[in-house]
Amino acid sequence: MPSARPTPPAAAGPSIHLRAAFTWLAVYSMIMATQTLLGPLLGSLSLPLRTLVVTGVVVPAVVYALVPAILRAYGALRRHGTRRGVKRTKGMCWPTWR
Image (cartoon, rainbow, N blue to C red; front, top):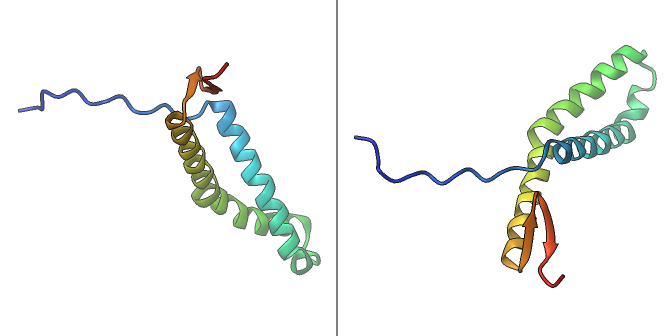
């Protein structure tokens, strides 16, 4: 028999625009780091091969590590702000002293 208790609604994540900004931040920083660290080793390769290596490093790092870490940090900051007297309005956090 199914449980009579209703399940609480899932917490809403960041807007698609904020997720796009987080993804861009992760991709940009990872490309810069990869080019800085591997640039001297990849300099002699052709552009398509260099791009293949860089994207092979950047995409998994961004998808599996950086964006999830950024989203966890964002969620923690939002939860911390809620406990400290911050009122949320349509995804934005506003101090309650206004």
